[in-house]
Image (tube, rainbow, N blue to C red):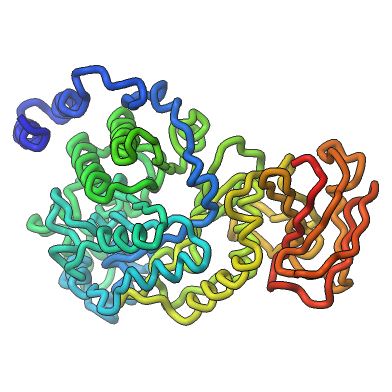
Length: 519
């Protein structure tokens, strides 16, 4: 009996067995009866704790992500598929003006308007590679319950609707063609609650009480059948039935098996207990097979507990790990909003580069989203940011790629105020200055970034003062990346003092290449 046949039989047996028994029976299907070789993982935290982050990810430092799908069609921001069903939100009001009331024109009707007329994945990935990206991540499925590949488990997918192309496969071909590691993101697990608002209704006004289109049972495979309308969304598993958990497992497993990624991003903790662990183990084991016995897989989750147990890589959304983090980790953020938004205010190139250097100095990677417009293109401001990042990388990439953190990440006067009420700490971030420094190492080389060009033409790095407990040895050579001439410098108790050339070799942060100190 094939796995798919067994699952169909189990699905038909749900009413009789009960969802819990079906879930237990499904586990029997998923778990090999023979013991796997020692190099393979089983779905336990003890087994998965032997996972080790592959060197490619530690060396990569920069990934670029494309949040793109049917929610990009209105070009009016993230969570569009949910917020049009919450009366009073900006997206609800916009939807009324552009499309009409969601009782008559809902998210199902937005999907066909997403056509990606100018989508050119090869061109996009080429741009991202020039900007320094070492891995590329495409959306696999967002919380809108729409699959961007040729899904075996739902008709609501990009091959059958909207763009009518396998977006994941197209991006995969482009990434591999240009030598980038390929990744996918999945945000599906909470969709059961997230889309429940589509079955609600206005609470006031001329159409108060008229059900939205999600109440129509013929669209239950898109909007779900959650009996409760979660207007205030609890981001947890309470109330999610086992039938949905099984469906999530099969959908994401299908994505992994078809896309064969080296990187999988989970929007949250590893969900659904043992079933979630089975998905992670399946991904790792498949990846070992794809790579002839070598584990090249990276699975990121937003749970510190999961990451500290060593079973995955910690992802910090829109923020930086401010304390020492002993394992490789990742920040995910966006130049603007997650899905394309005509109202968005973008990060400056200075802010992007500040974040990259700061994150790398703390043993992290930056996964940076450039949202695509409805037609599959970047706008002029996004192109400007990419161009400036490309120019900066040509000068400073040596001090970024393949590096490791030093004994301290850096120092300086700039303090990022942290508002405990803010979930995403980057919202209170300020630009770093010429007096701020960040360190990376590679072999016997220490790189010191000063995060702006000083007006005095001189830079002093007090963190490198002789007698500091982390300073071993004495500076023997100092170079400025991007500058071919010799520098005048001194090294004493107060630090490393460097007289800079008249013009900076690049905008924003600049890097000194230092020999002689113990890296």
